Length: 286
Length: 230
Image (cartoon, rainbow over the protein chains, first blue to last red):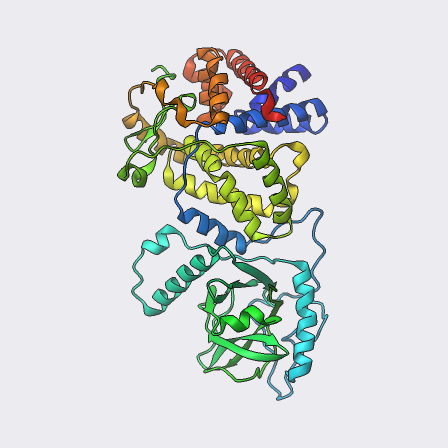
């Protein structure tokens, strides 16, 4: 039996075992170092065989792949320490308005690391940076944006909103293909979705993209901010409930600022934040 | 039908057995519309290998630009094997995308002690392509298509060998040292994603014979490609 299993290393490495056979072999593999090295060698041979059939993929595949990985968290080994998230939206604001609950709020409250209360400029910035550093240290979070596929692009968007969304998606895909593109992601603590800031100095362009942001009532918008000592408005945007993409109004500011934040503001946007940040992230530095 | 002659083809476009990478291969409608596209194998030179290893370290730290370079250095080989197994351009694109997303997610699992980056990617790519090919519904569709489109055997043209790079030439030379029956077994098992049992049924030979052919073929290839694993 063992003889037989040894002989399967090649067959296993080139994927010609049935699933059941492969499973059986894998059990054997776990305790047989000679088979393990046999499999590694056989894989090298298999990879060499692949050199016989090279094919050039369509150029768009590169942009699609890079767009997708920009929004895909990496798995760490060993498992990543749990991110201490920060609470920004649970407390009532001083003006008496209740705190906002974005999307599905988990039973378990996020651990409070840096409670952000009233947005007094200095303090807000300092707290925000502290919180954002934590996020940045943890790295990219989960994100479920589906890269625009050929099917999507071929569809003729009739609805102006749809068309705008499509244009923004195309713009994002394009930006992600820039050779100096940098991205940084952070988590929305309330929904556990991830938002990503994408910047390119060469293109002088900056965008923000997030999934799972709830659609807001008509009298409210999401507002983006760049934080560089002070908060500077970077444009307002809405979400269709699944996906939000926006181009930041001042790319230069986004390229030089320390951090980036999102708040919910009255329709039309505000000059200074009037509510708590629901998302913050430290921006990539040149 | 003689399986040695049943060469992969789709969309009315001829593909060739892998070891006769000697003629321009045109894949998919877009490429067909253009003039002959000659695809040259990815060099797997030691310097590329070293470069890929270094890039993977950066990828593990979340460096997307490094990942883009890994993509550029490996995608022809990855897309090539996926396309060859699936014989469907749209599906090959999908699977290639899945391969790279998996590679990104699992970058930390890459272990240079277990082989080259290109081998690691190739293993993921081949496994995903084979999984896809084995999903029965798609398989049925594919085989119906093929039944209508299997062309006659293309004649390899030795004078075109020059387009292949050293690596491909070495592999091709090694393939030619195999017996016809061994080559067929490797072709069906690796390049078509068939199980040993399926190969046995299609060739109407005992399963044990197929197992022996595949094992012997792989051992011979390994011997002749000795440096590949070094």
